[in-house]
Length: 144
Length: 144
DNA sequence: CAATTCACGTTGTACTATACAACTACATCT
DNA sequence: AGATGTAGTTGTATAGTACAACGTGAATTG
Image (tube, rainbow over all chains, first blue to last red):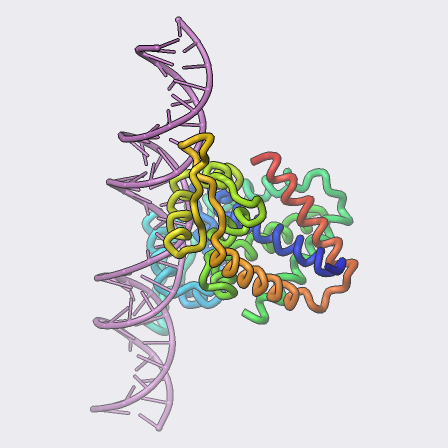
């Protein structure tokens, strides 16, 4: 096994271990929003509203899955639908003030959790780690 | 926002994006084994057999979850149970030859997928990325 | 040593996330 | 106007997961 093989093997194992834990960890950090609903709400906030179809396309989820997730967020009062006057098939989704607030709390908790995890890293390592992750994910997104 | 904050933010977003995709990606790479059953089977192979309780403790899963996962793997003929003669409560779990074979295929596919994703990385970057991931995960495991 | 407590695993129940297919309602294009 | 396409919902099914209750066997202890 070459050095290269060994590094790839470690990356594979560590990313897998991380993926396995992620949902449970997210649920612990912010029990009020699952990893998926957190992500969708964050996207709405970030994009200043978008359509369910856009969410489905961006996160590679079935439109029915998004529909139900959004329905749940709406029921919780975190998302509101605004009918598009241009196209009556379309609902533009926005976080409500309550949704923005709960998202803000979740983001703060997450951010703090990550800061704690990475507290003893020096800045140069953080910067390199960040760029490696960006590079890794960017390549994935292109391929689907 | 400091440079440090910016790096942590990127790490957080990228790891989250990765986690969201991981199960679906695994399902695409090896449809015959889910990410969880792959992991459990790999653990059995690696440890040369272990108990359901050990799997539950190691992966932070409920024992009932492990019980059902193992039952499914057994039904597929990928795992066998050997009663421990020392302690009749215990079943030591082992991959069957068929289980070892399907695991081997899945590992090969996964390994290849990772090699492809990382094909244009040079060895020094791979090595650093691997060590960052190890460092990140090691800290998590200690805290639970 | 009998009785209690503990450990291992299974089963009942419930919930969440997800996909696919069928459907409705609206839009667009020919 | 009719055919085709798009946005979203709903029916149905499956996987993964947790918690609680249970059965069985092991270990401890009065």
